[in-house]
Each structure stands twice: as structure tokens, then as C-alpha cells.
Image (cartoon, rainbow, N blue to C red; front, side):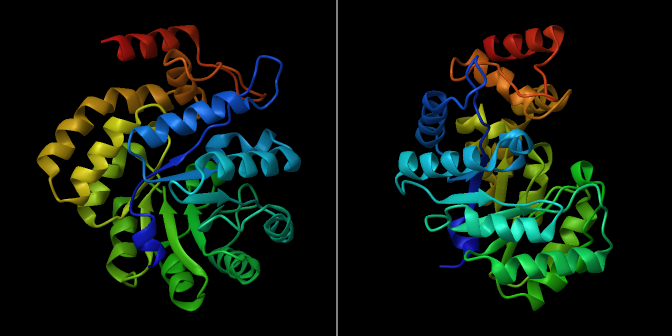
Length: 293
């Protein structure tokens, strides 16, 4: 089965819980993974940027990946995030992290150095050549400062055999439709924008790698499943009820928003590593009101 078949539906970019003394909270992580799987998510993405990867050591990342494999125990597929803005370092990480049990690698586009489209192409071509698993591109210009254009995505999909899909988070619906129009039948295209997932499903996307589904897995998965069945009456009804949650989650910072939700649900401590901080008290009150309504 192609990656497009394996990763259809709702994937979750899992947050990293911390204890009050700033250690990775494995008890809370296990609790969260069980919460996600019991509420219908289709696969797990560990060590995506929502997991606060910039403030984790390489050894912590490795331990989280290994814990995730063991806890999931092949109940759903696992994707591992391995990205960065130094191509050589990304290749080193591909050799360092345990990837045997992963179905794919999700690699965020280089941030800050803002390479040209040719630079992006060469970066991903080199990563794909050195990855033991299929590579999913991740275009998130709001974070990286540089958009990967549709032509570059299509070129990579056509010319580099180990590139199997894209998480597209440009927010540009025309760009998304251009990728979908030209993709091969086995090329995975998933949303990276929770608030745009429903219309993107209508355009032909295969699902989503979601932040919101950390805290609202049942509702969000139900919306995605309805959209994949072309039942957009149901999908819209569910999505309409989730719009306020999207706004709250992303008003100040990701993952501060979704961690506030998870704290109020009793799953994690509301702890971060700088430079990320908790939501303002006013916004946190609104999160509490949303969950209690």
C-alpha cells in the first residue's frame, strides 16, 4: 500500500508534556497517546515542531521516539519529524534517530535562511537520498519565512522517488489546488492548517496532520472522516462547532494554546520551555469556558 493509503485521515502532531521540574513527562505522554487512540485518530506524528523540538536535546528526542513506538505498539502508524535548516545536520539526524518502526519522515522546510526554490529542491533531494524511510515534505512559510511553491513540490514529487507526500500549510488555497491538480495517484497531500482542513478535503486532500486533534480528537476525526466520505453537510456542522477552538489555540502561540486545552482536560501539566510561555490568563479563561460550555 502507498503512503497515501496508509496515512489517510487524521494524524496528530503530538505535543511534548513537561513535568513541573522541566523533565519530559512520560506518564502524561502515555496518557495523551492513549487518549488519542481511544478517540479515533489514524496515526501519530512524533517530534514534529508542535512537540517543541527546538528546545529538546537530541537524546530527549530519541527517547521520546522510542517511548512512542513502545507505547503505540503498532496500533497505528507512526511518522517521525526530522527537519532543520542545515541539510548536513538533518542527514546526521536521520542516521541518529531510530526510524525502523516509522512509516515515514516528516521534514519541515528550512527556516530563517530562506533558500531559493532551487535550494529547497536540492535540500529535499539530498534528504530523500539519505532517508531510510519515505519523506513527507512540510511547507509552513508562516514559520519558516519562505514558501515552497507548487512547482517545486510537483518537481520533487516527480523527480525524487523517495519523496512520497507533503503536509501543506501555506494557507494558500490556490497553491493547494495546483498541487492536487498535478500530483501522481500515489502522492500523499495532507493539510497542515486545522482551520482550513474541511475545504481542503473538498479539494481532494487525503487528511490532515493536526494540532487541534491533540485536545479534540473525537470531534476533529469525525469531521475529517465525514469530509473524506464527501459528507460535507456533517463535516461543516462539526467544523462550525470547532472554529472557536481553532481561534483560541492559535491566538498567541502554538503549542501554548493546545497545551492549555490539554491541561484543562487533566492530561498534562501546563509547562513549557522558554522562549514559549503559557497563554495569558485572560485567554486561558476563554479556553476553560469553551470546554465547559
